[in-house]
Image 1 (cartoon, rainbow, N blue to C red):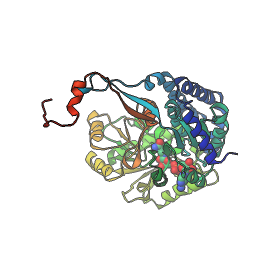
Image 2: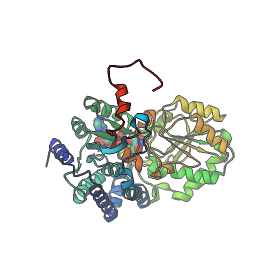
Image 3: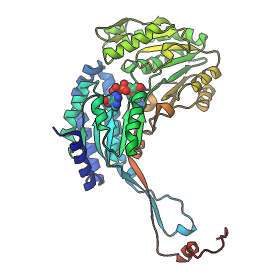
Length: 456
Ligand code: NAD
């Protein structure tokens, strides 16, 4: 088996040869990636079920369809994206010149994925990197071994092996990979590891995109159709067993709203998963025992009161959809990203109090507001900052390739999806091709200098 250095050298030699530059090459690789996903749907569903007990519908929606949509979009728009941009403002001295911005690939890039959407977190950045004309080393998460193995098997079968490679292994393998020079690092994962990614990138001055997590707040505020709100909220919170970077992490609402919301959540959960969510084929599991124990530890330390759910089983890493009330700011559940099916409710007296609370925390990856008053949605939008924002629903904003997906502050830097990903993996080269005309104007800048005259 080739060493990491041999793999990177092979990709670098290919990149230098220029084969990834033509539109046709990129298009062919994107189409092959499309075939990879379409022809292996069942293998993907099986791998995700093995890794995360992920229901087939959730895999179809959040691993397969999201990737296919991004692929269709890239294939359809590639020619337009690749066009040089001539809409550059010119001045008197440059009016005869050709001025344009050219999107050029960065080179050999590294994509490091996290375990919670182990397929799409590798394939979506890959779509963007291929579209932009790069060679790519992919490092899937070792935590979801079945998906990791599937990617390692399928990528070389479908895509050019001289341009695209999968490296498997754990944190040590990622660390050794990071000793090499890349032209861009695209990392999805936790904030602590992101710090070591930045540190590893620094000696090479490698640009980095960081897709991180954090605590995504969710306001439920004012008069509202509680049943509708509970459905949208429960879907976005408990999808993938709460293991989504954009899942609502905690709720902010008044005691009055909370008391009206709780029965609606209870009824919704029964409708979604039946009387015992643990027996429902639509409820996933926590990814590993280590992650299960972390969640149970947070739950045990919490001073909040469990009012819905709370059932759990170590043997199959199960935690029921769980809601807690009487949670304080200092509570264990409010200190770090939950990343599981546990939903604490922090009560507030006013909207402003909730906004102040959010603004005292790190900037979240997503922020949600449910209200039937547009002014409430707008007030929260105008007075907070977050990577993304969705009014009256959770998580669904990330399904549109037209919207940039990424964090701000501690929730990440840079973005992707659709054209935004193409831009992330492209260098915007500022080009000017001067005309030989108008030398009369040029002479004004040559020495010997005349007195500086603002009128010319
Ligand atoms: P993880 O443990 O799978 O790690 C992610 C990657 O980092 C893996 O490929 C792993 O090999 C590598 N890694 C782990 N330790 C490392 C180290 N010390 N040095 C170098 N590389 C190392 O995933 P995770 O970090 O537990 O992922 C969960 C986090 O990711 C959550 O915080 C979640 O919010 C965030 N997330 C963000 C997004 C997003 O798009 N913004 C999407 C999914 C997950």
